Each structure stands twice: as structure tokens, then as C-alpha cells.
Amino acid sequence: MDPTTLLKTIVSLIVVVEPLGAAPLFLSLTHNQNTAQRNHTARRAIVAVFLILLISALIGKLLLELFGISLASFKAAGGILFLFMGLEMINAQPSRSRQTPEEAEEAEHRDDIAIVPMALPQLAGPGAIGSVILLAQKGPFFPHILWVTGVIAVVCFVAWLCLRLADPMGKAMGKTGLNIMTRVMGLIVVAVAVEFMIGGIKELWAG
Image 1 (cartoon, rainbow, N blue to C red):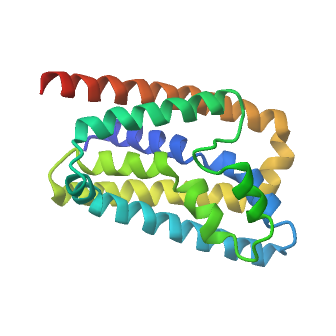
Image 2 (cartoon, rainbow, N blue to C red):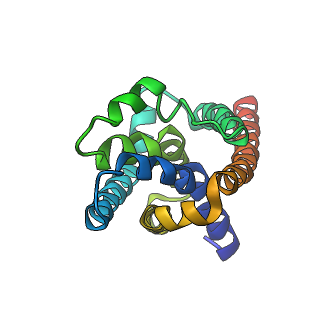
């Protein structure tokens, strides 16, 4: 994987995972924790995200074959999902594909929020899982899976930084600043969605 493609892949996955958008929710759900407890929760959440995305990359092709889903169909469907996610981000609205209002209300009463809802579905949501499954199919399993693992590790590190620095970032950027960042990332997600949909439709048409 050449450096330009690698950088594009990392940025695209960071945008889909949307760690900046998860930071305010993380602060809200850990408001009763001290700094040490909050940092511990962030570490556990990111470890879970790494494992979820890595396992998805490893067994994604097997699952597609099990259900008889072609990669082109999955790519087109993923594009549609990304499109809705991107439009919600542009409107600075929480994505219902990650968490419904009912799930959000339930999460407020959980003692441990690291795995659910922070890791799954907030960070390692359907969009992120779909992205790594498609990413893992872009080359021969080995050594391509090593590149995929590296990309996931970098994205998880960025997500960990966002959670770790959620409090000072929130104070520095404010609600307006976070919404602006979310809208910019939403535009990128929509662009990724269009690429996925066009690529999937082209492959289906050719087949």
C-alpha cells in the first residue's frame, strides 16, 4: 500500500469512526467518574474497538460468503449507509445507525459504558465495521491484513486521544466548534459514500 493510499485510508476510517463526535457523549456518560476512572474507561473502550474491527476484518469475507453476499453488493449497501450517516453529520445530528434515543437513555443508567455503548456501536458502528471488511478485501490476505491491522491501530490511537482529551477539547472548541468539525467530516463521509456506491454499482453492472 503506497503512502498516499495509506493516508487516505486512515483518514477515511477516522472520519467514519468519528471519535470527535463521540467525545461529548463520552463526557456525558462518565460525568460521575474522576480523571483516573475516565481514562481507564477510555482505554477499555478503545481496546474493544480495536478487537471488534480486527475481528471484522479477519472474518468479514467468510460472513459475506456464508450469507451469499457479493463484495459489490456489500460495497453498494455500505455506500448507502455512509450516505445517511454523512447527511446526519452535516446536519450535526446524532446518527440513529449508531444509537437510537431509547438506547442512549438506557446507556445513561449503565455502570460500565466502555464496551456498550462507547465501543459498540458508538465508535465501532456499522459504518466502521463495513469499512474494515471492504478494506480487508482490497489485496491478498497476507500481507495485506498486516496493513489493515496497522490502519486500525492508528485509528484507535486517534480515537483514544479524542476520548482522553475530550474535556479540554470540548472547552476549547465549544459546541459550535464541534458541530463545524462534525459537518466537515460529514462531507467527507458523503464523498466516501458516493465512491463506494459508484464502485459497487459498476462491479454489479459489469458482472
